[in-house]
Length: 235
Image 1: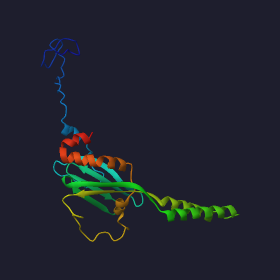
Image 2 (image 1 turned 120 degrees about the vertical axis):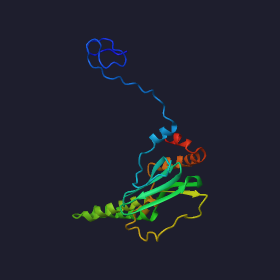
Image 3 (image 1 turned 45 degrees about the horizontal axis):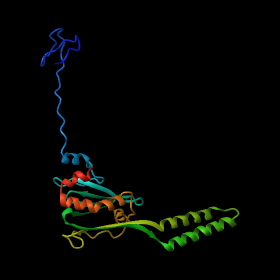
Image 4 (image 1 turned 30 degrees about the horizontal axis):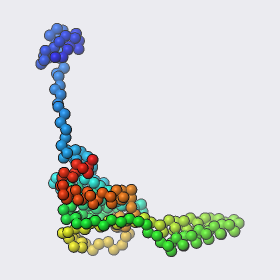
């Protein structure tokens, strides 16, 4: 039973005013008992609200379970994501004037092949070292002009840097397809204007290790447990 805020008298339940002083009474609010959300509701709340690439639509009852930024190219600017849902595995990459999309039905995934390492161009490294040493030698004997020598040293350092590039690849095999199940159009004939293709040969990102560690178990759980795996992987 509530009490009047003006005079402190008891107010009967349901009364609109205090029987002692006549002050108006605010209607009481009935508390709603807490109900723990189901694991489906928790999974839906935990999943990303949108995908990084605009325009990617989900099928009926399809839920995003995991998403990896597995490709990141600085020049030309291009970012690629591997998205695992409870129905599909998709790769999407987008550059300024181009876009690439690959997908496979989750139930048909029969194997994964993952690798990442370091590409070493020995010839490029040797050339860069020669350029740096040549620039230092010229800089040592030069008396006035130093800009060409410094430029040679900088270019040599750049050549060495680009000769040491991280690399990775990921192949997803499907039991329902041989080769490429979908092939449309003439395809890209040059990389100019088709920067999204760089995402296919990109160096690894911070998500690559996690993707390689999780992807096999994630696909296996989704194939065997169905939507029950969403609760586990969306935590």
